[in-house]
Amino acid sequence: MRRAIVTAIPGTTRDVIAQEAEWRGRRFSLVDTGGMFGASEDPLHALVLERGQRAVADADVMVLVVDGRDGLVPGDREIARIARAANRPLLLAINKMDDKRARAGALDFYQLGIEPVFEISAEHGEGVGDLLDGILDVLPPGPSPPKADKDDEYAAEPAASAAPVDRAQPPDEVGIAIVGRPNAGKSSLVNRLLREERMIVSETPGTTRDSVDTVLTWHKRQFRIVDTAGIRRPGRVAQSGQVESVSVLLARRSIESADIVVLVVDAAAGATDQDAAIAGEADRQGKGVIIVANKWDLMKGQGSDFVKLFDEQLRRQLKFLDYAPILHVSAATGERAPKLLEEIDRVAASRRSRVKTHQLNTLVEKIAATHPPQSPGRRHVRILYAAQTSVAPPTFVFFTNVATSFHFSYERYLVNQLREAFGFLGTPIRIQVRSRRRKAAEHGQKP
Ligand code: GDP
Image 1 (cartoon, rainbow, N blue to C red):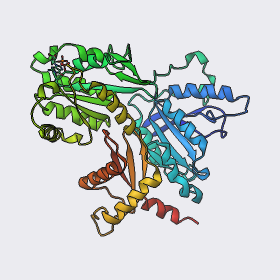
Image 2: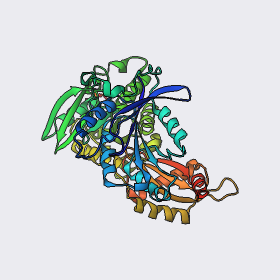
Image 3: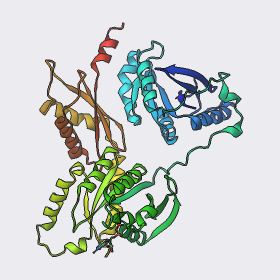
């Protein structure tokens, strides 16, 4: 059954209410969890919380509804954190946008890092269609739910039928996919990492069927190498005629379950189209990337310029990855292998880092003054402000005076500016453009 869930702020309604809904021919249940989050003196709170948690466990999509008129309050951050931990597609709806105060403070909610954001007025019906479209966008395909015989089906459900909650990845754990062509040295590299000093190693079931992940605990950090068994399987596929596509396919699967992709390239052989394909996949999936030029022990004694020339060539071959650090490693001798763990740690942090809104807008003002976007029509396109709407990968919304999209090269310019100002080592950056004109005009009409 497909369910969307609406999570209200504390203290509005207390019961969990489910209601059938239909939008553009799709039917789904909307479940209001009431004031399930936050502290409460209410003796019924524990009960509400329990029902709410069951509703969350059952939901396919969550919508966090915040009160725009109150502005961002400390409790919102806590609720956002809990909602994110549920590991469902999550949407943010800022309600009461018909109110002037709400419009003034709406931007603050982008700090919650939930995306997409919908500015709505439930009372006036504004923006609600967009929100429903947004729900359909992330609702998994499936049959329409059977009609509920009661509105309060959750309240009636016995506790024993609660759906199990998915195994969630601990928040500090970093998932690592070690990918690359057969014989690049992936398996040797994994073995080398497992032998690191002060490393505690354990095996756990992986996310894909029959796969096994290895969890490394190192200096209080936890790394999960995805599908270790797959990496270690000796290059059997390497002998077959379909080498190329098979390893790209396998890589794609591991990349999906990872935060950081370590692309292992045989330094002596250089990068190929297949490496470029894997690189493109990592970039598309918004993962952090580190390039390991392995077998560096074979590259010694080539003169002082060699490293520079080598890296330049590698970057030309892997053109998606201009942001990825290159490490020269030898899995055979262990040279610079510990450095890889440090680099993974650094890239994982930068992929999750968040720029303060005022710092971002200082940069935006400078850009708007010195290098504004080109205007396709007669109207001048102006960037009004920007907000970082999410992390992993860092995503920025640029608000403009007219509905537009930026030219590819301008987007690239913005990304470079963001990197120059804030770093973002090893992680792709996403840019979105939105117009503020329509909203301003709409609201401007009202008394
Ligand atoms: P995989 O197919 O990517 O897992 O590659 P393997 O780890 O099985 O390594 C393929 C071959 O390269 C093996 O013969 C390894 O001994 C060799 N190899 C791996 N790493 C290095 C290295 O750093 N230096 C040298 N010289 N050989 C290496």
